[in-house]
Image (spheres, rainbow, N blue to C red):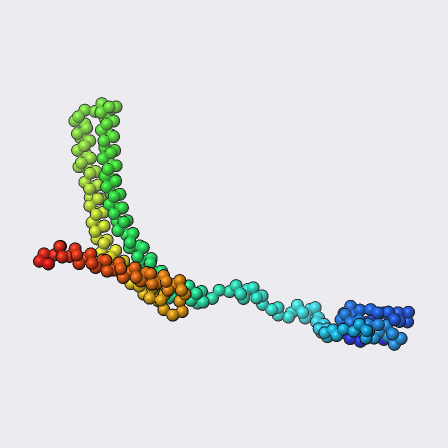
Length: 240
């Protein structure tokens, strides 16, 4: 009696008492019936099943190369593509120009803050002197001669140093204007080139709008600066 599955060859323990019994192959899921000759495909319930995959030895299966994870490949970052998505070279020029404009726009304010700091130091020293004099009169009972000596010592030693600090801060603020103007000019140039790049082909609509607005604002600012300079120059230069 045939005791093997006609489809996949799986072996089953069947006997004459099992004639007429219908079973399902555990390996290939084929519908089988036990006949007098043994296992046969049940024609009434036969369903075409795909041929089973060839068995692979476990030891050999461990040595097979595993497919790469799609998640790992999808998470890889392409710096060139990312740079292009952010606008490329125009964005880099625009950002550097904005950085220069911000730095040299606040540089004069910092210079003026340095002058104010030096003046504040002078005011504090004067206040401390007044407090010492008040204490010397009321608590220490110092004479007018001692108080005059305190004033002379302050005017001879500390006051000149504080005055020099204020003058140095003012001179430094005046000298920094030269570099601030150059830095601001370079910042405007980079901003202008970046804005023109934003208006080129391949840029998004938002970048085009930003580039147009910044470019128009630069033209207006430059026009106002030159108009102011020409107006001031007529009154400042003799014979004009």
